[in-house]
Each structure stands twice: as structure tokens, then as C-alpha cells.
Image 1: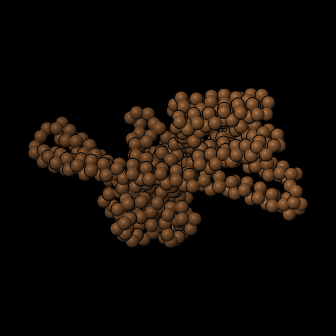
Image 2: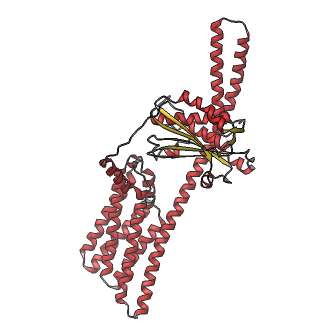
Image 3: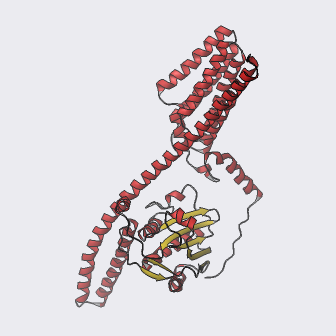
Length: 476
């Protein structure tokens, strides 16, 4: 291995492109580079919110259309009908596009739908303002009723797009403020009546904004809980299936290996002995695979013991030389304060080998990898869901590669997920490492940016207390 130096030159054009992506996508919870992301989950919430049932959609359009006709008849102002007709055409086209859209959804399609939505909201609200300014009690009441209907509609529906929610909320709140403050001119009760109008207007509009914010928080929490529940169920199913297959496969291997050993005891030619030795080696590799599968399902048999980290890193240095090419530099940064940990040393070594191989693949064989061990901080213990601080050692593996795309980061710990070609990866490496850490009584996290990827494994210093019965039931 040798030290290699790599410099990443970012041109002004690349930097401007990154800033543009950040500006256009940040409000919707996206990150730079998401132009190739599938926006169907966001569009799905827009379909549910803005279309609903066909009956509701027809009723909504019918009320607005009839209202425009009667207002034009009563006021002799044809611009009202023209205004509302433009709204109905725009909103109708928006609804038609939503009803026909299919996954996956590109960023350009999503941007077009956002623009149509904003135009529809602007047309509707501006028409309500125009009617309000006509000044007669009937028109003022109608304009306020239209605004209240829009506010109630927004509160009762949820769109995952933060941009649309922000725009709709601000437009309704500002229009409400305009209606209320414009009523001050018509007040006849002096200062006291004006203050009542101001307080009522500000209070109602503020409460509307707070209700919208609270609604977003509730929906985000529900969506996160639903995704977590689905992921838990999936991992439990995969774990049970994997454990069952691994146990059955292990039973078959026991029989196969036993018969091969009996055949070796019999006298045979040198060629037959070599073939039997190859068969034994293949059986050993299959046995190692079943152990890894059991680790994935948190049901592996771990030979845990107190591991001296100084001796472990010295021994592991030889392993690094066998798996790291000469163009890749691997450094070990061991904090002497972290002296020991309690786990299966063979499984720990296997986990580190998997992570180094992953880093080698991400770097393309050229780059830097840092291995380290130190005591876990209180913040890290909280992030791992572990307590108390000072009872765990963090084993870290960090590289300076291009990082994992944001859309793939939550998926890399899912079994059988891989971005490599057919035959180049099974998608079991990181899930097995995570299973080993959790079965050892610790935790696992992975973070990635465009500057590299960092994997943290929290391993207890001492023998962990046995899990409670309810926690055992939750394990997949």
C-alpha cells in the first residue's frame, strides 16, 4: 500500500449548477442531485388532496361555475365570469394532469404541476379579492365565504410538497389579513371597534397558519411511523425466512461434510484426495455463509469474549495488506483510552473486512480509508439508542470516496439491495454488519456525503445485560 493524493477541482459552472439545484429542491425536502429522483410519492399526496372523488371534483367545479354566472348576472360585470372561467380551465387542466400521471415522475413534470397549482390558487384568491372590493354586503360575504372555504379545504387536505403548502398558506393568510384590515374603514365604533377587528383578524390568520404547521408535523410523523412499521415488518419477515433457510442449509452441510470426511479416510488416488479437499473447502465456505445469514437474522451463535483492541489492530494489519490494493491507503487511528470491548472477534474482523471491501469498491481501488476505535460520546449513544455513555466503543470505517446517493442511503441496510452488477454483490454485507452489531448489544449507523462515507459500529465494553422478553419479541 502507498499514500496517494487526490484533488477534487470544482469549477464555477459546477458550483452554480449545485446552487440552482439546492434552491429549487430544498423547500420540498430534497437535496442537490435529486433531479433524477422519482417524485411520485409527492404527486400521490397531491392527487389525494386536490382531486379526491369524481363527485367532489364535479361539485367543486359546479359551485364555482354557477357562482360566477350568477355574480355576472347580478353585477353586470362579465370580467368575473372570464376570471372564474380562466381559473376553472387552469384548475381543470391541473386536475386532468394529476388524474392521468403515472410513476415514475420526473422533476420537470413535478415543476409543471407546481406551477399550475400556484396559478390556480392565485386566480381563485385574486377573484375573491376583486369581489370583496365591490363593497356591497352580499359580495363581501361571498368573498369571505370563498376564502373560508379555501382555508378549510387546505386544512382538511395534506400535500407532501412543502412549497405548495407554504404558498397556499401564505396566500390565504395574507388575503384574510387584507379582508379584515379593509373592514376598519367601514367601522363606525371608533378605536375600540377597530382594535376588535385587528385582533380578530390577526388572531384568526395566525391560528390558521399554526393549524397548517401542526397538520404538516402530524402528517410527517405519521408518514415516518408508517415507513418505520413497514421496514420493521419487512426486516422481521426477511430475518425469519433467512434463519429458516440457514438452519436447513446447515443441516444439509453437516451431512455432506460428514460423508466427505468419511471418503477421505478411505484410501484413494491423489487426484481423488485433492477433489475431496476442494469439496471440504467449499463446504467450509458454505458454512461461513450460513453463519453470516444467521447474523443477518440476529440468530447467529456468537463466541463473545473480551477483545484487547491493541492486539486486535496489530493482528488485523496483516489482513488489511491482503485485501487492500497498493493504490489504496488504509490508516488505523486507535484511541488508547478505548482498550477493550466485548464481542465475537472473528465476527468483528469479518465485519471490518466487508466494510473495507465496500470502501475499495466505492473508491475504485484508489483513495484513503481510515479505521478507528474510541469511546462513544453521549450524543452517539443517544443516536444509537444506547445508554449509558462510556459503556461502548465506537469502531469507525471512513473513506474519501464519492459517497452514497441520498436516495440509496436508507436502502443500503436492506437485505439484498445492491448497486453493483449481477454477480458482483449480494446486498448482504451491510445488513450482516448491522445484525452483528445489534446482536452484540450495540448499534450501527451509516452517514454519507459527497466527501465520503462513514460507518460507525458501537460495541459494548463489557458483557451486555440480556434483553428483556418484550425486546426479544420485537427482534426480527
